[in-house]
Length: 167
Image 1: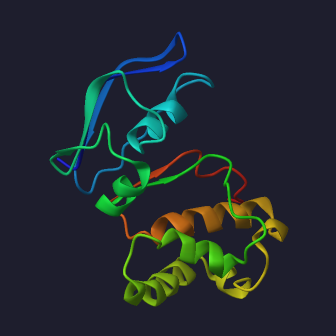
Image 2 (image 1 turned 90 degrees about the vertical axis):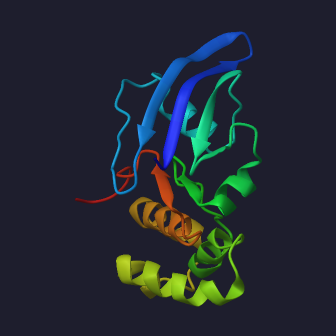
């Protein structure tokens, strides 16, 4: 099993936002969280990524509990989150944003990673020297996904991945 989320309990102050969510992801699987706005999908992903802390339950990634690990260590372990709303570094170029995605990787992996992202998203290669904040919304979404791929994750979590993308 690649990821196991066991009975997580997440609070925003006194508000109990996530009440006992459990699921698992096996290697090669695609798992989706579906629910209404405010149902806790983003909160669940943020908790798995270490951006929020669960007050109960556990999160096990590749056989190791990550429930209390720092987010950058979770990325280094091979789990990446592409957040909702793109969150690109607006003043940096496309290529600089992509390089930021590889911050936990060896320098020798950056160039092959860039080539992989440019193969998946040729538009980013065309715009690699362009300041990210001037890209269209869909291009920024491609950039956010590419940045996640640059960390060479074993598991990538996409929060609202189609936001701003043309069919």
